[in-house]
Image (cartoon, rainbow, N blue to C red; front, side):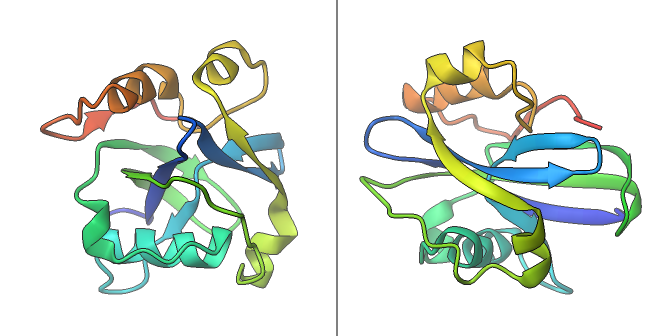
Length: 158
């Protein structure tokens, strides 16, 4: 049993840039993929689609997301939960999308510091903290059209 299970999305635009959201945590600022915790009895793909709508204003049918392409799991002790966490990542492409954060929950809005579309070279060279770890090799494969037959395990980040 997980203390927290979340669905996240690797959202890539027509210029092969990955959308990351800035967040302020107790230990510093980080960049994260859109996504968040599952509600009781919610499917991973439904949670991922809901989070896209809430956090960036993108409406997607959960079936368009396919299955997860990656996951990360490990222990965390955060203000809202303590124990083993698991994040599952979906991959989705759009030609273009204007970010709309107006549907973020108040709690999310309190941590949100902005958004940015990142190129693969940006991800490889940044000194900023980006979660999940191990994104550049995975994104390289995804951008080249290689969707893993099973979700790839990424390093845990806490």
